[in-house]
Length: 260
Image (tube, rainbow, N blue to C red; front, side, top):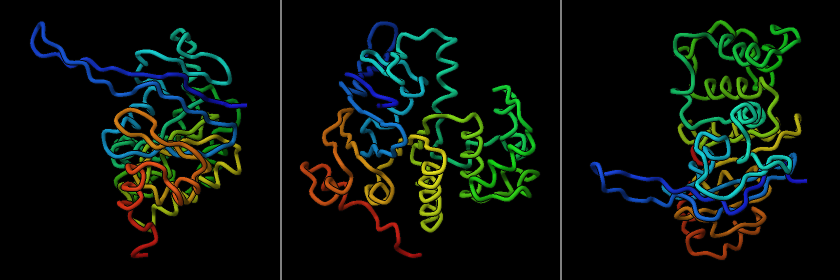
């Protein structure tokens, strides 16, 4: 059974000029994607393709203009505000910039403890914090550290631990390694795959880089100008793309093992 799917999902932004004039920007057009339980899929596209807009709609940071989103066969576009709040605990997002994702005034412990308290975690919070840090390959000694004391890869691990604190069913990783050193990118991608296997969580990996997608994803959606232009098993698309646009993305992708 699919855990998440979209049906004819579209998003139009209105850009206003003065009091009367306004332009319509079609960011997404009739997007149909499916995420199976325990699956890791990729959504790829160049800048401006609509992939990040799609991610923000899936976590309801934006509302779709039209179309439907089904979470475990429930149409969340019909949810009220209380139901949306509950849904957001089930689908967590890891953003691109590890340097902007954490509050510099608070420790690693605070960042992980806060969602546990807000979600009314009823177990031992100290043990849970240590468990989450171990899950992202950080030892408990990092609890007292502040963001400025961490590398980019360590910050992304902390944010990942924070996202996992509420036991989400889905994780959306939006360009989570694009700002990291090449060797650290592979470590984070491998970590995502291990977390998926250990927890049975479903993951959507969003990127412009088809080489990193080929390392960890099962299936792939290629986006261009707000539309899905190609979809299928990752190996099939990488080895035999049907669209010229996809071929150009493959040619532009750097070798993830270069310079290691």
